[in-house]
Amino acid sequence: MAEDSSISVVIPAYNREATIETAVRSVLSQTRPPLEVIVVDDGSADATAARVEAIADPRVRLIRQPNGGISAARNSGIRESRGNWIAFQDSDDEWLPRKLERQLATLAAATDDPVAVYCGLLITGTADDPATGRTGRQRIAYHPDPAVTHVSGHILPTLMATNPISTQTLLARRQTLIDIGMFDTSLKSLVDWDIAIRLAEQGSIAFTDEPLVIQRFTPNSITRDRAKRVDSWIALLNKHSARFEQHPKAHLFHLHRIAGNLRHMGEHKRAAPWFAEARSLAPLDPRMALLSILNALGISR
Image (cartoon, rainbow, N blue to C red; front, side, top):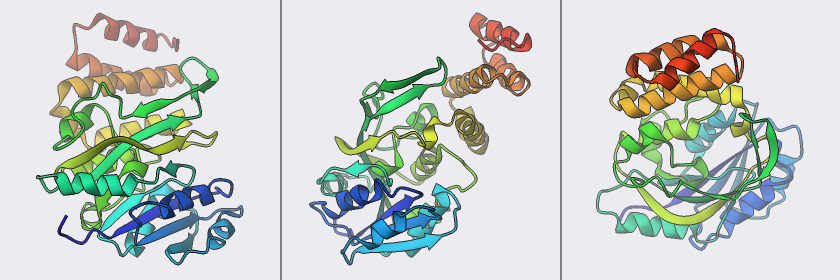
C-alpha cells in the first residue's frame, strides 16, 4: 500500500478498570505497531484512567470527558487522532498480535481501493437469551457467520440483511469516517451496523477471514439490553429506510423481527404498526397474520 498507512487506535472506556490494561496491551503488542493508542475515558467512576496512566508507553494517550456514550467517545478519539487509518478496540476485548499486520496485507492485496477492512471475531463467554429467559449459556462462535457469503467488496446488499462487521474488527480511513459524520450518537446500540452501512456507501470494504479479535461478553455488554437494541433497530431502519426498501426480503425480515420483539416485550400497541407494515409486504403469509392477531389480543408468547 503506497499511501501513508499510519494507524491510530481508539479505545472508548467506561468503568473498565478490570479489563482496560489487557485491551491496551493487546494493541501495543501488535506485530505491526500503531502510531498511537487513544483511550477515551467516558466519565468512569472507577480506576480506569489510573490503569491507563500506569502504562509506560509514549504511544498511549488518555482523554477524559464527561459520560456521553460510546459513540461520542469514539468520535472524540477520531478527532484527536493523527493516523491516516483508524482502528477501534473495545475496552473489554483483546486483539491477537497479527491483527493490524494481516489487515494491512489484505488492503495491500486489494485492487478496488477499499475504504475499510475488517476481520473475523471470536466470541466467548456467556450470553442470555431474552426470548426464552435462559441465562448463562456458554457461547463460543465465529463472526461473521460462515453462512454469510458476500462479506467483502461492495457489501451493501449483505448489510441490508445482516451486519458482519463488529467495530473492534474495523480499520477504516480517517478521512472517510470524518466525511460520513463519524458515529451516530443518537443510537444506543447497533452503532457498528450503522457505521458499516455508511462506509459501504462510500466504497468497497475488504475482509481478512481470520479470528484476530477475541470478544468477551460481560454482564453490562450493551448488546444484552433488549429494549435499547429494539429502539436502535427501529431508528436504524428509519434512518436508512430508502436503502432497506430497495431490498424487500431483508426489509420484511427486519419488520417481522421488530414487531415480534415488541410483542414478546408486551408492547403490543407499539408492535401493531410494524405487523401491519410487514403484512403489507407479505399479505399471504399465514404466520404473519397469526402473529398479528395474537398481538392484537395482547398475547405475548
